[in-house]
Image (cartoon, rainbow, N blue to C red; front, side, top):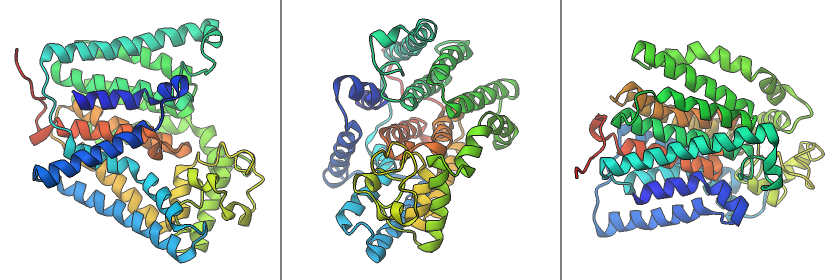
Amino acid sequence: MFYLVVIFLLIFQGTLENLIGIGFLDEIILITLFLICLKKILLDRKEIKLYRLEKWIFLCFFCYFIIGVISDITFNIQNDHLFSLTSGFLSIKFILLYYMSRICIPELKIKRKNLRKIYYFLKAILFGYAFVGGLNIIFNFLSYVIKSVPLGFSHVAELDFFAFSIFTLMLFFNSIYKFEKVYSLNFIPLLIITLVSGRTKALAFFMLLLALYFMLNVTGKIKIKYFLYISPIIIWIGYDRIIKNLFSSKEARGVLLRTSIEIAKDFFPLGSGFGTFATYFSTTRYSPLYYYYGINNVWGISPEKTDFAMDAHWAAITAESGFIGLIFYLIAILLLFILLFKFKVEPKVKLAMTSLLLYCIIASTADSIFTSYRGGAVFIIIAFFINNVKNHTNKLKDEKG
């Protein structure tokens, strides 16, 4: 139950930080899980059990991290190794949270009636936000109550992340416990919140999730080729944004992506090192690379306004760890997807387990979701799912009573 509370806190971190100033929950949770892991390993002598693919995933991320460290030692662009190392840890924070959660989070032991209450509590939250969001679309009344447009969150990206996380948790629980027969009705509030967020990527993911769900209902299976069938729809929805991101010479994301390839070539094969490009740390101590490549005057990247300098996650990976680091990173994400897909569980459980990772991948095309608290929350949820389908069954532990 404690870990469900942790997940809920992370899902709502955007609201907590925006309205009452409570931030850094993911860092606090990381330290807490680290201490719990030390206790379990050193004092309790708990054996660490991981799937073989998880060991390969860890190795890939470890190689990516080492490449960034070597690059920093070699080029020392920021003239502060500790600064760059901190940026490097931030870039893998989400995967550290994943492995610590895999070690720490036990199987969920909760009475069915109590889990049912939690399920309908989540449902009430989802419908409640959709209702308020729908009213706000019509009357814009929240502008008189909450200054932030996205229903109390500091950014619309946090709003759609919140909605998809709640929806996925509900899908996971309902697929196992069958709390309601017609789960598809929950797509209605999800669609409303997606429209309120107004993000192309969120709408694209919603269409992907909806199509997969109904394909699954018709065929009773979920296969990788289904993703290929739906991909043209996703490309069509996000076509304008894709063109702007990849080919624009004026928009920050397009500039960052194209410049990252130049950096990877110039600093071949290991990149420029952590904290040097398209990351939070590269803006707090403004990186010399922005000047060197002549992009310091681009709106959203300039020293005076760095709002969009962190909106190209893959630009940061490509530039800071080079092509080799990018390959290790991509392989790790692919292996995690394969791991989740290989579980012998009901198709809807499998959809719940894979959907948030797909959401992260889609969002990361123009967002630093992996390095934000949202990335940490997603990977803790994924670890929670894996721990609760132990032995490849489709049933959670259930204490009767």
